[in-house]
Image 1 (cartoon, rainbow, N blue to C red):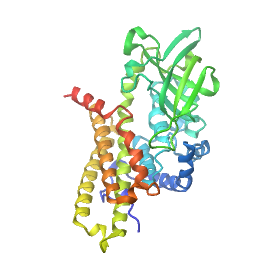
Image 2: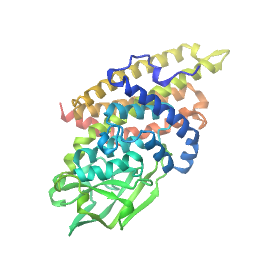
Image 3: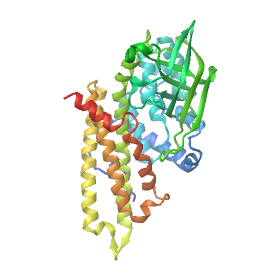
Length: 390
């Protein structure tokens, strides 16, 4: 019987993962196993998950799980989002970009949009009619969000937006994009604003190529171009211009915790698959698990994974209770993604030459894991933020 990634560490479930959260995990796991996994090679080849799957996920209640029911969501918390992301990682369909849609894009609308905007946008995000993205990174501005050059100039009841973005997750499919712009370049960070672009309704918006990445092939990642793009001033998030940088800083801890979610889920799957492999694979007349080196390596990895899971569970508990500070969120992002890279690398090594073959899931995990140390703010930036808190 195959080792279950959700049980590989043999830890008791934390309080936040009990009852309906556990039921949601089971439902999400079943959905990913039945609807996404059988077509995942196709999605990797096409470099995107098709829109039909987004609509199915919406119909199954897997979109906007933490949004209030009055806006079409399921009325949950980040614990529910964690259950969905963990199911994605445990099944191994990491390129299905609903985590960003659910727990990064939608919360900006919940926290900063007007009541009219919430009623207009959140229900469509919950059904999958709208697919969300957030456009921060530019060719010349990555982790330094104060350095964005995209400009939004007011012209009557519209903004005229010019600039470009790159490395935008869900960029080919997204028709609802939160764009980080400068509404007053002279004010630096205080001149930054967030503007929603409904791509089906604007002129001057252009998608670039679907970028050719090392890993996460099934997740479309794109360049975006704004050429005198006209957006209604009513699409500004917040009651006035210049709130964008503060809004970003307030929401980035959850984004960084979400990266930790993906990390711990993949760590657990890598361990489960590797334990199964070393029990079955033989060398020199005995199973690889019988060699002391294999036992020592897996002992180390399971210990570190257990530490990671306990830390992650504590971060989620603190977050849903309103007590996760930015420095601790940065710790979770950097340490768990670093550990993810280490565990997957060591597990690949235990597969020997087969670990280098694309037909083995560990090879895909090796590729997919690498970006975790880069996006959401590089791990070097995380250490800088932690250092500033000392």
